[in-house]
Image 1: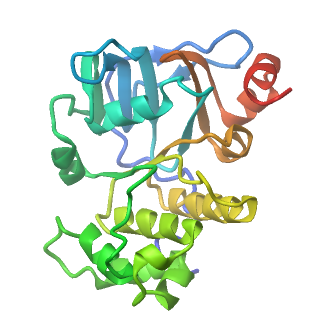
Image 2: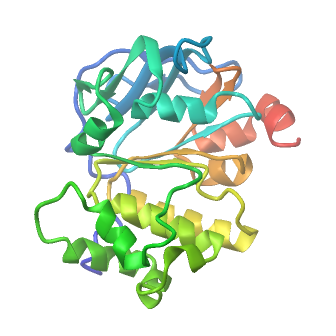
Length: 274
């Protein structure tokens, strides 16, 4: 077995860093299977209500959560509040009601920078690389909060994304869209995050590249790192998801495992094209 922790098959077996306690249990919408217990969630945005600045609320009692080794996917129609929910968890907008907890700690009032220091890795949908810097310089920038030797982590990223090692001296702005996304994810991994958040990582890439990115995301989750992901490609995302949240107008509409949501007639009819 490889010594690379991004490739070792740990699956969902490592629950040692899950924090007991907390609050809440999500009730599944009719037809979406079992209620999903979030009381021990490693990362949870709990009953969040809020919006941008002094504007109207976009999220309404929205709850999303993920545990170690899980891939949790947020899907829904355009304008449903998917990316807004992700940004709320990362501290980029006001949560007027509810809370955000990481490993049992309430981080609702922390800035995004402070959340990164706590162990949150966030990859935005756009403007997520330094185009004029080389691939390797981008990865080095990802390790800005670290004071230890980063070479081992960089090798792990190169093992996960071999094309990046081949192009490590090339400006990131010259790469293809899929390769840029690999740089963005790799840079987030350089912080050695406790949780990885991805906002539409396959936006604008070909189906072949999308499948490859999903394969790499699965490999990262097998190390035990929780992954919270917003995706427009709902069907493909739910196929790899341990947990799925369907949002409509900023509210939880359906919740269940990926398989449950894929099999749910209402979800299929409304969001997956039948």
